[in-house]
Image 1 (cartoon, rainbow, N blue to C red):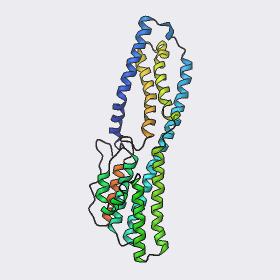
Image 2: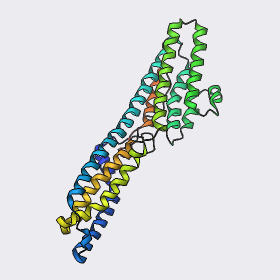
Image 3: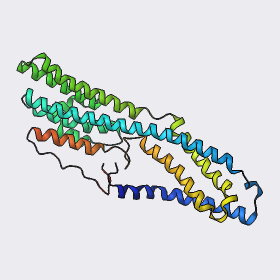
Image 4: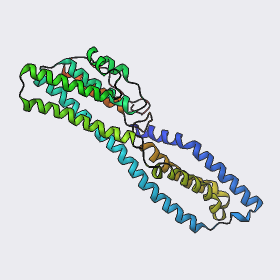
Length: 291
């Protein structure tokens, strides 16, 4: 996730530079054809294209709002994972005698979760934090985060039985695990349910068609300055499309995705410090991007 506004602006400009050059080249070709060779077929009325552009901008705005809603819901659910992980660590320390294997397993959970959600391999972090017997139990599981939650639930039940803890207190701890499972389910829903093709593919196709037709319609009015005006307007539509495409996939390896590694490290640090262990170094932004 981009956390430095200046760096973020440079990233956006770098990502848009190729598109801008391509649009400018096409606009220059159109100007040359019209101004030097007087192609009459290019005399297209501007009103229809203006109406199409307004409708396209409205459609892309709705699509981008939908994409941002996915991105923000993912961030909200990760916030729930963070809060419930901290609550679980506190309950283990205050009610279950501070069993380190359970706290470390909870610290491993967000790493397993980000592995399951994105194209990321955090298995080394999971193996580093999980107790060997727990790691053996979840080995081969298709959904390892769910396997860790199961092991945590079994460990809580075992410790509660051993200490004769009241059922209400036991249920309170188990409810935290249920909330984690609910948040995980929401994250998996976002990950495995892409936007419909009407929202993901159609805007890009329409934006590309619009950028091709735009200079043909504008050249009658703008003449030799068509590459300047048409390229900037076309770039606006392309950037709108790219913004939605970046936000609709919040778990991919991208500067625009959620900082899952940073959030997982934060959870790990908070939990390990609660049992007196030294956590791994905090993740810092690199070139304005927080991984």
